[in-house]
Amino acid sequence: MQFSTQRAAAANEEESAAFLISPVKDFITPASKLISVASTDTANMAIVAMQQAGVRHVVVADSVQNYRLTPSSAIAGVVSMQDVMRQIQKDERLSLDSLQQKFPGLKDPMSQMREEIKSQANELARDPETAKKDLIRVGTAVFSAVAVGGFLSGSPWLHDHANIAMIGIFILGYTFIIFEEVFEFDKAAVAILMSTGMWVTYGDYYGESGGVASKEIVAQLGEQLSEVSEICFFLLAASTIVEVVDAHQGFKVVTNRITTTSKKTLFWTIGFLTFFLSAILNNLTVTIVMCSLLKKLVPVEKDRKLFGAMVVVAANAGGVWTPIGDVTTTMLWMNNQLSTIPTVTELFLPSIVCLVGSLAFLVNQVEEDGSLENSSLPVPSDLATRGNVVFWSGIASLLAVPVFAEFTGLPPYLAMLTGLGAMWTLTDIIHMGEEDGEALKVPAALSKLDTAGILFFLGILMSIGVLDKSGILKDLAVFLNDNLPSQDIIATVIGLASALIDNVPLVAATQGMYELADYGTDDRLWQLIALCAGTGGSILVIGSASGVALMGLEKVDFLWYAKKVSVGAAVGYFAGIATYLAQDALLHGSLFNSIVPEAMAAVDMVGTSVNGLF
Image (cartoon, rainbow, N blue to C red; front, side, top):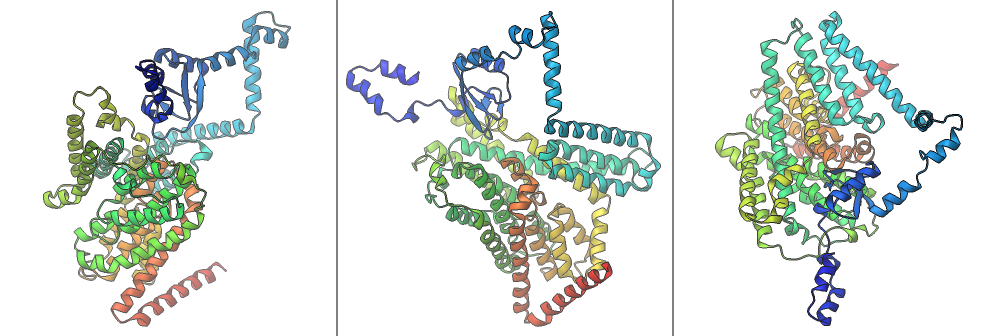
């Protein structure tokens, strides 16, 4: 319509003919303004959408919001009003004539329609997929009734075995999250129910609780919620800043410099870029930024998942070797167990070996197929002044977080919220009085955020918090200390445990086990814990904040990650540990006196365990 209108207004034939060679991009409707319906919507909903908008066509996608596409929408096609009406006219399953022929013994049309609906329901019930869903529904209903009944009855078993009940709820919840596609329960709902179930068990039945949570436990709940909320607000603010920068095409500053059409070259480039960015920015922020870039650079969804997983591995490895990178390194640094220069100099090499080891394994899954030529990147061009202002303001907001936290002593989430407020004000000023500027402001960016992903994050961390507050994680740390032959092996196992359980409470429990007087600042134990806890979380997608964020950003599920990425992440993990131990032994002149005895001790431990089985 825009093309026709402008051509009709042409002053002469030459000007009119110029429209025939004009690029299509000059007349397209922006994606944010396309009227859309979900593929599961009914025909009458599509008709209503077209009538309300005054259009004759709508885009069909897997998910829409308020008849508009979302950033995660996958477009299935386009449908016209004529197509919909023609299909409705062809559909004679419930027409009076077909019903009369199918049920000649019934004269009432309503009775015929009821019988047809029953017939369709019976056919659907015989489908194996429907039977599986019915079984899941019944099993869920029975389990829910038993669980609620057990809580309400105040069972003595719960009082005596509250810790077992909490571990059971945790394992069950993680099972539903891992097999999300099988059970078809949203992982955010499962995570929230898991956390509330564990907190109710802890508050009302653990220890000396008499069926009602004590003031001490309520205070612990508030403390945990405060800690988790800080992370969620950090995630919310960082995601919004990145979304605003992207809306202004700010990432052209980066994408204009990426011209390769080789997926393997891009894989390594993004990996090293993420590694070094995560050394100065929070891992979570880097993951959000890089995944936003990947949506433009990598058009194929399955490739983008693998690239996103690589970003998680690179972000976790890069955050280890600086005090402001990974949260666990920061914890150890703030408690004076690590200092800046030794951390950088002694953990850099193991961290980059971890990265290279993992990427060298994962890059074999990347297939060169020329798909990068179909990326959604525009032709490299100069970024508008507004875009430059927004981009560099957004980058400054992200980089200022550790500086703000260091100088004010206030938590990082407040710095990120301050940056969001500044970006909000900036975009309001830039687009003041513009009718089309609303889509480029912060409220529009907020509407695009994955709220379910943030709630999933909340549920997971609140669940881990129960295990921490109840002392279960502390008991695990003590068990490891009593049963493993050396601190190096303990640190390695802690790293493996952090693939399943958040590394923050694990490191916190370790800090409480070993005194600074016995293991001084920059002791090998603290450095190895920082390395293992930081990189071990990459082995499973739920093992780090970056991985959990990836689950929401790219819809990566647990089983896919375990199949495609876990082995490669583990290769890098153990390569990093081996590099650190060799480097430490060389620096202190104890290569054979240190590594060989510990290796023999590990072999003896494995041998003893195997003999015990037989």
